[in-house]
Structures are given as C-alpha cells and as structure tokens.
Amino acid sequence: MSALSRDDVAHVAMLARIQLTDDELDRLAGQLDQIVGWVGQINEVAAQDVPPMSHPLPLTNVTRADEVRPSLTPEQALAGAPASAQQRFSVPRILDEE
Amino acid sequence: MSTVTDLTSLTAAQMADGLAAGEFTSVELTQAHLDRIALLNPVLNAFLHVDSEGALATAADVDARRAAGEELPRLAGVPIAVKDIACTQGLPTTAGSRTLEGWIPPYDATIVTRLKEAGLPILGKTNMDEFAMGSSTEHSAYGPTRNPWDLDRIPGGSGGGSSAAVAAFLAPLAIGSDTGGSIRQPAAVTGSVGAKPTYGGVSRYGVIALASSLDQIGPCARTVTDAALLHEVIGGHDPMDSTSIDAPVPPVVEAAANRDLTGLRVGIVKELTGDGYQAGVQARFDESVELLRRAGAEIVEVSCPHFDYAMAAYYLILPSEASSNLARYDAMRYGLRVGPDGVDSPSAEQVMAASRDAGFGDEVKRRIILGTYALSSGYYDAYYGQAQKVRTLIARDFEAAFEQADVLISPTAPTTAFRIGDKLEDPMAMYLNDVATIPANLAGIPGLSLPSGVADEDGLPVGIQILAPATQDQRMYAVGAALEALLAEQWGGSGSVLDRAPDVTTGVTTGASAEDAK
Image 1: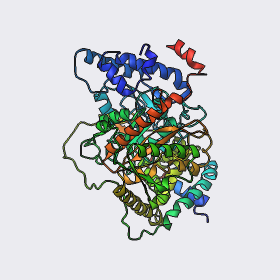
Image 2: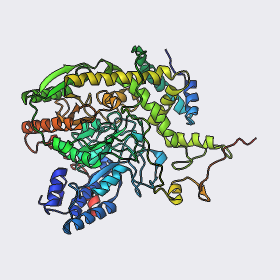
Image 3: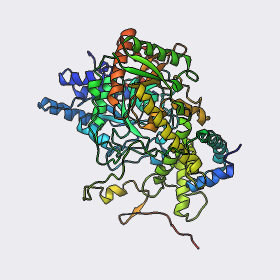
Image 4: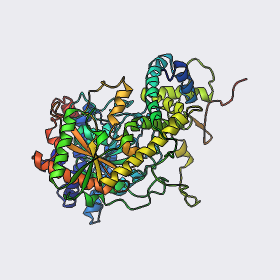
C-alpha cells in the first residue's frame, strides 16, 4: 500500500518550509513512501499500556539561578546574519502585499 | 622517535608521556601532524578546515608553560581534531552543510572550552555527513571522506572525518558525536576505537543538535586507554546543558588499566548476531568471544526481542526531533539566504523555503519531511507516539539483559566498509548499517567499539561493540582494554590492527607538491 503520495510529500515539504523542485519531488517521493511504509512496522508491537519514553534521563524542570551572566555582544550576535541594519536582523517582508 | 614523522605513530598516552619527559615538544608533535595532514588530506578529505596557526600557538604556549615548571593536565600538548558539529569560536563550523558554509560561531562549545583548558592543540574541524545524518560521510556537502584502508571505500559516518583522521595518523584523538552510531560505526570500519558515553555524560552545549534525546558527544582514538583519557577531559556536569548528568565522570581511565575478566558476565545479544552479519564480521566476533571466555569471563546469551523494532522506532524519533531542531535554519539570523527564482519582493516565508531547499542536501530533506509527517496531526499517535512506546520496551529489554550480564556485546556494524556510492541512492540500505548501534542511543546507555581484527574475505577491519548500563561507562572501558590486550597478544607487532592497513602514503602523488608548498 502506498503510504505517502507525491502530493503528500509536496504538502509536508511546504509545512517544513522546503520548496522542493519537481525533480526533487520525483526522486524523494518514492523513497519517502518506502521509508514510511517500513517505519509503520512499529504498529505491529502491542504497546497500548506502555508509557511513552521521550528521553533517557529522569530529569524534570532543570533550572538555574535567574542571574545576569556574560552573553554575546550585538556585533557577535549579528556576525553571521545574512543582512542586518541598526543592530537588528534585517529580514524580508513578513506580510502579504495586498 | 628518531624523526618527527614517527611521532604521529605514537598513542596519545605515549605522546603525553614523551611531552612530560621532555623527549619532544608540543610544537614538534603538532607540526608533525600538520605535515601529515598537508600530505594526506587532499586524498582523504578528513578535515574541512585546518587551523595550523591556532594549533601551533596552543602548542607553543603549552611548551612554554611546561618549560616554566607549571603542572599541566595529562594530555596538554597532544593535538586533537574536532568534528565540525561542535562550535569553535573564530573557526568555521558547518556541520557538513551548505547552509552553514563560512559560518563562524561567536562562542565555543563546552567540550571545546574543556579541550582548550586542558591544553590540547586543535588541528582543525573534521568532515561529517550533513548535520550528522548518515553512515558514510557521503552526505557531506563538501565531498566524501575516504577510508585510509581503501580509498574507494567509506570511513563510516556520520563521523567519517574523525575516524579517518585517527586511523590515518593525522590526529591521535578526535571528537565525535553519536546519535545512532556515528562514533562507533566509523571506528569499526576504520580499525579505530570510539566510545559513546552515557546520555548526558558529556555536555552538548554549543554542539549542533540533530536529535536531542539521542545525541551524545564522545572520544575517537586508536586505543581504549586513549579514548578514556579524552573521555575524562570532556566528560562531567555542565550547567549550560540541562540534560547533563550532575555526577562525577565514571572512573574510565582507571578502568582502562584493567586486564582482569575473571567472573565477569558477558551477554551476547541474540538479536544482534547471525543473520545479516557478514561472515568475516561474525568470525572475528566469535573469536573475541572465545578470548573473553578463556580469560575467565562467563558468556551468556540474552534476548532483547524488541530490538527488531529499534530501527523503525529510531527512524521516527530521530526525524521528528531533527525536523524541530533544524527549524532554526530559517535564513533570517545566520546561514544561507537565497531568494526564490522569478519572484519580485519575496516574503520571508518564500525566502525561507527557497533557502532551505538550496542549503540542505537530499538526506536532510528526507528526514525533515519524514519527521514533519510523523508529527503531523492525524499521524502523531501511529508514528511518533507509538515509537516512544517501543522505545520504552527497548529500554526494558536492556534492563532485563543487564540483570543477566555485566556488559553486553555484539559486532559494531553488520559489514565492513562498503564502496563509496554503493548505498547512496538506497536510503534504507544505508540505514541498516546502524542496526547494532541504535538500541544504545534509544536507551541512553554507553557503548564502545574497538577493532576485533580484519575480515578474511576483504581484509578490511571489523569492530566489536561493548555496551554497559547507564552511568557505568567504566565497565566498557575495562572489558575493552582487557580484550584489546588479548587481541594484541594474538596479533603481535605493535598490537594494533592498523599494522595491517596499507600505507596510505603509497601512491599519494600530491606528496611532493605538498612538501614544496610549505
């Protein structure tokens, strides 16, 4: 059975903010369908009453003292920015034009 | 030790002793490695960036401090390579991705800080599968690393740069990261040693995240003792990593001096041997089992029935976490930014989608899409939710197995190194390389791989994996060191499997020009 169609892959890719080309969709869709079919085998395991494990360590709410400590300067924080202006990250428009 | 070239063939422990005894300086030792890198890196592509100046400056500083009579950490002056997944202030850090090409982090990872505090000259940054996704280093955006045993073969992955560097004597020590086997499998296929500590045993602050509930930093080396020495430098609690264990580093160096196996219970994991393992891999494993038995260990067979589902659970949990972690590469604050073709005044969302398409390779896209799908509404319970339950069952299998055995063993990887290109178009075949290493990551327990010999059919190295309960890392070092000594006795020579590796400098035609260029 096909788990994942080419359209599904295109949709999920957009949810993940990856604009796949047609060639990439052709290549990845078949592979992803095969992989999704294969990982689906975990549903063969009867695990209704088993608690989920999100993490190997029994840690909860690790906190630290709320104290100011040394951090990056604005220049350091902006050093890798694709574009910056006035000590801020400069980004493309975030609203639709209309 | 008569020439500088010979220095690279010493173990890290011998280098440390030689430096302490004044037999040679750290500048000489570091320069010997830089020379070998200049000669061989054009062929191996193990390093993405070499920091000669920085390494020699650290070496000179260590030499000066030693000459002044200062008491120095054991590994001070011994050079090291760092996987390009750890942030290094002032040195490019790419994680093997086009999206981070040329990025220079504004801060050091905690492990890098600890290396600097311990006085280890950092030779450079090693190649890796993009964002550590892969088992061959072929998924690097900067070309594959080649296995020093056979230049047409893979050095394992994701940490193939670190394993090749160590196995080819470009560095005595290297940093690796292991999410599903990325330290242990490269060690196995290059005839070197690699250890994944207990989850939380080594800080991940400043290390580029792949899957946060699985990732662990650890040592790559040529001997078990050298791995333990590096483990001790990088291990221990770090308040900057909230998943860091607040307890002393297990006594790994002390354990690596162990040669006594009397009464030790060694469990063979039934599900991780036999079918699917290459004949030469299985043969070397069986021989090691026999050596352990003759040395007084009690061999028992244990069954971990849910391991059959470990791969499937892993390939849901890892992509789910990765899809979330890699959301940070949004082309806004750092990393590659490109606009979509033919769009005037594109929106941030369009720029983001175009940049991520241009900046990520196929394997990264596959896993992000798979993870996004597994977490999406309507599929969460059947995929991610169910995988987390299976993860519990795998951890319980380990708990039961460790009731019957002090350590568990298996071959590290099902095959020896395969040819570059062989599995590139078949992601599923690639994933199966990690069948024996993945369960440890799911449960958070430590694992170590050391060489068990070479396979008869292809003459390539084979690794054996030793697993221990969480926080009991010293056990795998104790058993590993004892087995290493037994194998060395059997093999003779220097006792290292690397004695049997072909001379990688043979046929390196760039050698003369690299020398001239200096």
